[in-house]
Figure 1 (tube, rainbow, N blue to C red):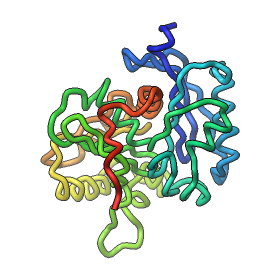
Figure 2: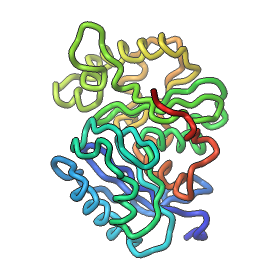
Figure 3: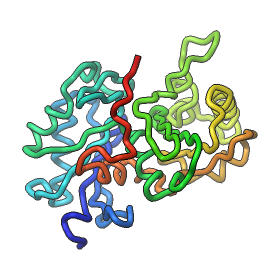
Figure 4: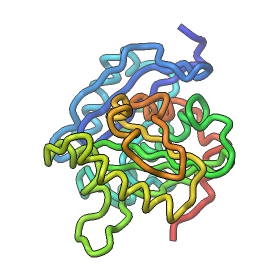
Amino acid sequence: MAKDKTRAVGVDIGGTGIKAAIVDLEAGTLLSDRVKVATPQGAEPEDVLTAVLTVLDTLGVREDAIPLGVAFPAIVKSGRTLSAANVSQRWIGFEAEKFFEDGLGRDIHFANDADVAGVAEMRYGAARGIQGLTILTTLGTGIGSAVIYNGVLIPNSELGHLQRAGHKRDFEAWTAYSAMERETLDWAQWAERLQVYYSHVEFLFTPDLFIVGGGVSKHADQFLPLLKLNTPIVPAIHRNNAGIIGAAALSLGAAPELDTTVTRA
């Protein structure tokens, strides 16, 4: 096992699953098996905390002093969750970081799940050393996004909630991987929706690189070649582990590349 200063625990809370592992902070790799439990029905704060305690018990680090980072699917500002797209509405305006610190009995670093995935890819993956504008999207229960410019992460972008002109549902509801499963779309049908989404984001931001994360990125060869974009688009190197790795990487506090001074309108 690596020395304490080079390892940390990352917990990635999602709309359908809660994943955790011990991470080597020097290599950006998992030092333990990945532990996963289902996100409790309704994703109420107390039930989510219980599930997090379960994964920490399984990893054998509940009482350990090892640093801990937690990723959560919401806008996060100063430790407070400001949205709740795929979890209980009680998370809106909730002092989430303090809630987890009190419940876990330790200090943690708490951040948006897509943002920490962006940190993982920036430090150890497909965005490492990339200049210009990189946009990472995670395709899962929803669509998370991380916007990175010249190695600086601009937090809480929420590009999955871009509105579709003339439609009631936003892009996340129509284009996330959960929509593919819910509507039993094949890869080609889903790629048609992804084409509309990424073309729209491309028009708005003119990025230099798209990175696609989330569990479905392991099947990137099934849908990325079907997209016709001017911007290069590649799968995340750390795929569905990016949230775990990024949360662990930020566990000792906000990293220089995480620009927490940026405010939302």
